[in-house]
Image (cartoon, rainbow, N blue to C red):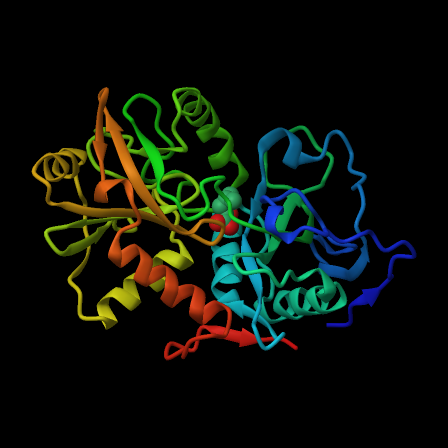
Length: 355
Ligand code: COI
């Protein structure tokens, strides 16, 4: 793929204090874009200065929600190299999301190439401080102006990037989660396993209500019975009960996380009992009451491994792992981060060096 590069004339100032980057606040100098037209396929791949988009107010993404995205990161190793972590998995999931929302697939090799070129052009933006990285947000929107309900014939794919720190203000400190037994995020047969913008929109009200009560996130239960634990919107969840690590199975309503998959493989590789099985909230709460819930943690690209220190269900607070980061959570964090930043052996072949 021949990517046309139009470099910016005005380089922005880079953040001076990398200890305080937050998440999703800063973008770099450039972005990648590519158009799709039915009959022509993907055309006009280009890297251009970061800036506003101009789209028709009748663009179908704005009306019927044909919008999907991905989230991955570039890591600066202590050797100054820049690494990606299982990036093809993100683009394969992007294509699965596209298919679910009647949007066109992309060529994984081409978007990988575009991602690498964009990062290399803006490589001085990849932060060096521990716990920081360059977040990469590939996005596809339907741009065809049309108000009848059907899949659009025109799309824009763009990739924007920016330096980030921890996703939660808690950093690696345990988060408090509220078990949501009123609203639901997604149901089997819906779009819950796609990385579709609409899934996030439908999660906001519950998250806002929980935030007002002092919680970081909500833990979603299944839509049909409000009985089984699903995910935490920005993370997949794992519970350690009586030495068994349990994560919800991929039944269609939860996001098939790449960090989730990595955790499952590492835990199995370590010889720890790992079960992908339906787990009722009652089982979790009972284990918490009996002191058998040893740990709970979330996994995600943005959140990495995020320990849960408190679970609140039906007005009852349950402290997990003494409100501290559990031993397994810490070990998994060290292993995954060590692989991502090029500090540990990568027996799984997950790390890609791009410079
Ligand atoms: C990610 O982990 O990359 C996500 O996309 C979660 C959230 C920031 C939307």
